[in-house]
Amino acid sequence: MLSPHQYRYERNIHSPNCQNLVAVDAGGSVVGYTSLLLDVYPHSGPEVWRKYPLYIGVMAVSPEWQNRGVGTRLLERQVAESRLSRPQYSFIHLEVDPESAARRLYERLGFEKLEVNQGSWLMRRAI
Image (cartoon, rainbow, N blue to C red; front, side, top):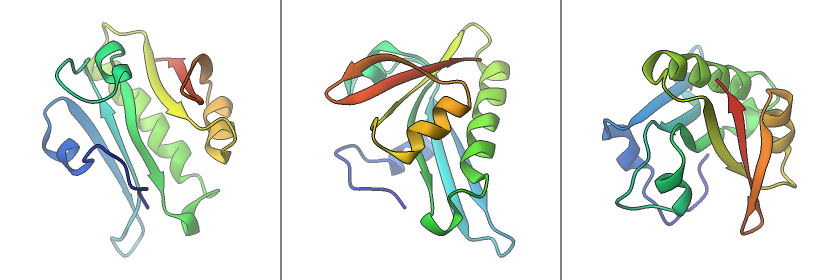
C-alpha cells in the first residue's frame, strides 16, 4: 500500500507528534492509513515538515479499496480530529503528484494548490 520512501513511516506510529488513522474492512484487514504531523518538526524530514503544521505525511488506500470512499472518510476524520487537537491552526497540508488521481480527491474535498515543490503540489485546506 505504501510506496518506498526515504523516511521511515513506521516511526510515525509511535510519535506523539503524529495523529494516525487506520481504516479496516469487516474482517479487520487494513485497507487505508493516514498519518498527520501535528506540529512542525524542526529536527528531520523534508522542509515542509519543518515549515507547516498539520501536514499529512502519509495517505494510502489499498488499490482494491480505492474509489469506495475510504480516502474521503480518512481525510474528513483527520480534518475533524485536527480541529479538536490543534484549534490554533487554520489549515491542514499535504503534497501530491499533480497527475495522480489522488489530486482530484483532494480538490473535491476542498484542498487548494499553495505552491509547487520539486514537481509536487503542496495543497492546503481550511480546517
